[in-house]
Amino acid sequence: MKLAIILFNLGGPDHVDAIEPFLFNLFNDKAIIGAPQPIRWMLARYISMRRAPIAAEIYGHLGGKSPLLEQTQDQSEALKKSLSENLGSGVEVKTFISMRYWHPMSDECAHYVKEFDPDHIVLLPLYPQFSTTTTGSSFEDWHRAAKKAKIKAKTTSVCCYPVNEGFADAIVEKLWPQIEQTCYIDKPRILFSAHGLPKKIVDGGDPYQWQVEQTALAVVKKLNLPALDWWVSYQSRVGPLEWIGPNTEDEIIRAGKEKVPLIVVPIAFVSEHSETLVELDIEYRELAKKSGVPSYMRTPTVTTHPSFISGLRDLVLSHISNDLGVKPEGNIRLCPAKHNRCICKG
Image 1 (cartoon, rainbow, N blue to C red):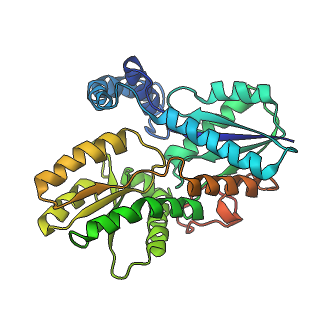
Image 2 (image 1 turned 45 degrees about the vertical axis):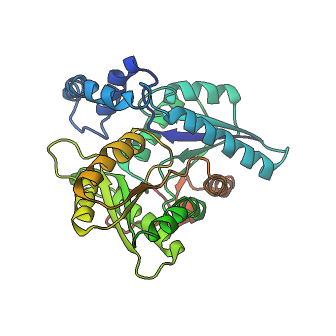
């Protein structure tokens, strides 16, 4: 048996000249800007040109490129090794990467998957919480590319895993030493920060915010600390639309006013990139200092933590005999009925 695992992520520019086309691809996605063509194309062109200099300054802190692809490659190799060890010699496992807005994108990935000629494909997003703007968009583009490449293999999809045991364990293991360190100063506040969304997307049935909150609850339960001071907030707000809240910047300012030490935990990111390495580590750290936060720490993302990779491995293993096209972890639909944009069939 030949098993193909396709890992999906956002992608990022791999050099300075890729920043503007990366942004164009992002804003030309109908899941991000819902305007019809050619209006969306013109808006994407205008926004990407306007934002490119700002983004170039951000990526300048990272050597002019995103580290996301290299980290995804590391996760891909770790997952392949773990699966191969568990499945044995009777199954040939190969992992592939499909980025949504910069290379390797869906068509490139589909070309290599077609060459591999697998018997079974498992689509595995590196977005633990489902959103139409991330997993939904990535899956839709993959199916387009797979159809174009005439890939006929059985395909099953992991739509979400917000309370995955391995994912939560990895966060706790990264977070716990910081809690112990900060407790010597004062009782810290845990701020679980996730990338935000326009409120109208969530109001339209997107389950992302609810799933982010479920991840935070799963981590808090594992910490098992009485009277833990914790909050969920959302970062990276841009544009004139109303976004889901509370806003991470506002929560940092509030912690400063209350003189509470902060530990910021990126709860929806599994890799380091501009939102963690620049926004959280540089911009928000400076805001915390300016606001009078007595101590500001940021928990690293799970990247290739053994517990996280084991969690991904178990998700794949559960899909090998799956007859459902799309399912969440445990085959049970997690989201309340009002989140009708969730695609799982559990």
